[in-house]
Length: 234
Image (cartoon, rainbow, N blue to C red; front, top):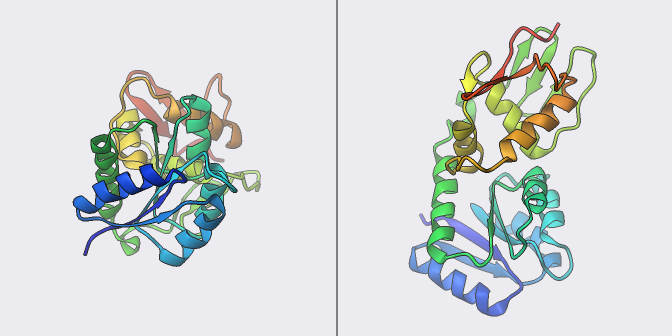
């Protein structure tokens, strides 16, 4: 059964060209042209993957991504003509899985789509994943996507921050490289320049009350990656 893609793009011609290209590669593609129609279409059609333009009439892509993520766990790839890292980080914080800039070569977009769908289909079934972890007075629950700290507080994490923390916690005590985190969270290789993971770690440390100057809860292992400590939660 082919994967189903919903393309949210207000440029008629571009929408038709991208949809035709993806259909040639045996994807089922439906299109939406107006931002206000995007969230209802996503929740009604439940596609495997959404290609979401940022600059849309009505609701913009960031707002759509944030609203859809409350009830949709499929892949979202954001596309925009902008070329600012702030936009990329913002999109990922709102729950996007990947982010590409226009003009996008069709083959590049196709490769990103395939990478994201491989990542999703390679996930262990829900029943094979633990519901949560407890280390000292730290608790994390996958089903409720909640975290409880030793002082009893419940940090407000974005979808991207929770996914990053879960990736680290599920390998607690081990060093996880940026490359592995990029593959796991975005389905792409780390290019040595992208600071998305580093930015996410900085925000997690702040929300987890981890001193950025001498972090003990999420440690940096120079030249290797990051390590979630099992022992810093009393």
